[in-house]
Image (cartoon, rainbow, N blue to C red; front, side, top):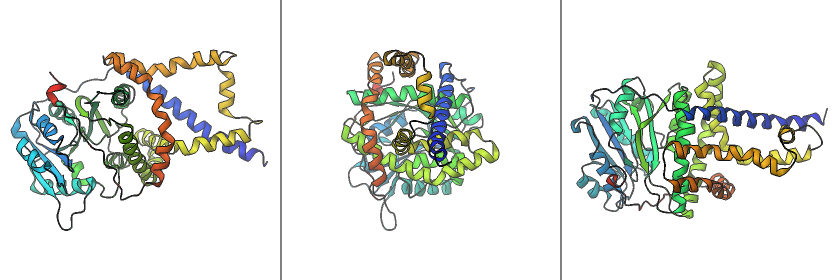
Length: 411
């Protein structure tokens, strides 16, 4: 009896991890076929384009310029830069580039991206006149077709939308590794979820919400990763987030390991907080209503804990090594009697996502960079630990310096 308890404790998480892995493997197979494009619709919706910024004088001009070059009737969209307690020339550069600057500073206005966005959206909603809100970061660039694509998707009834994210800077090995990850994720994660009716993952830039969604779901003032928090909040309330392959947004990738680690610690801290807030509500909705979108979001959320679970699981497996353990059983049931044969069996699984690089016609250097993705794995444990102990008031801002214009990326 007492021996069965640790065996059960060991095998239950193994079963859950195995099923989650199989689920995402099967889901990714849909990525070998492209999705259906929405029908083209005449431009009719008015868009408010919001870009929060804190001391972004090095890149804000390029970001606003990309929005001014959108192929959409100029009278149907307006660009707002939400200057969040800026002390440099961000406001003057943004205004000169063609944006309306909303100054989020002064008495009673505490700095923070979520606070700034909530404040700005409330003001714009009160003034009225917009059908949808699009969000971009100061280091991002929008493809000229972004609004046209968003308009087409909204015409089909989509209320919340995430555009396809790509990297704008691939000037060193780290940025190319991260850029290759976007290509693979778009093809084998976002595209399958869109095609099968699940919700896309929000990325903070390239997002579009109808005015109704913007009014009913204001941005959270306290979270560190407002995009993930909004994603889970929408899903737990039954709002599906669509993904638009044809609405492309380019993001700046960290160019140094220090920037990469600093950013990921913030993301991890925010993800842990989001999981704490929404995981059980997502599970409840999934089981009560049979909501597959909520189920997938719960699985995605729960993976935040995997680096804490895996070492504990390994210890329990070792302690119960003379009893049945699912992972050990599966390992010995794999074809081949030697480690070499088992490695050869696993090789296609490690190379399988790299097919996205070819299917998306990405440059060959991204193919090589993708194969180096495991190198970044050495930072996962320290990043996870840093995310646990990171202070709530410490933002960990990433400096943006990549002076890339939309003309450098799009002919």
